[in-house]
Length: 225
Image (cartoon, rainbow, N blue to C red; front, side):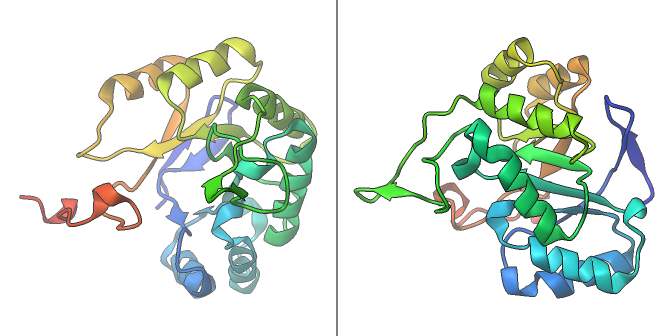
């Protein structure tokens, strides 16, 4: 639990983080137990709906803020540059903190602007028209304002990342993506290393979640001989 990695901006990120996706009502207790067990990196996101639960668990733990690493993520309905700071402020309020350690763009795919997390038209998610490069530039402003110590991305392809690097000023400190023995992405991982971008792996034991069609009836990686 004590191992840390240095990011390209000089900040340090704990090697192991505690994720809070799903089981929304159980997250306060889960984070409480995680903190007792020694976790100091807590990962949440606006779409998870768990930021308030994370904040409550942290308050009850009594652990000083400067001993924690808090990550949250910008959701797709707030990609417009005029919406990014407002979305970040909402997350800061729910997390009961004055700053984040890491703010990620959850996906490079914008939804239509508004308060609805999954805006739909004719039964399909209604896309937005904001370029993710412009979204990231708005995140750069939040970084300069001191509202987060680092910014990064999640779920980007190599082509999307290469374009982002060419058209923005701040190299992402972190890219959070699915990575495990069944999905190793070695060449992509090497590319990140060459650019000084830290990879945070999610689903490190494989992704058998049945909300994804490909996860149905899939064996557990941890049971694979």
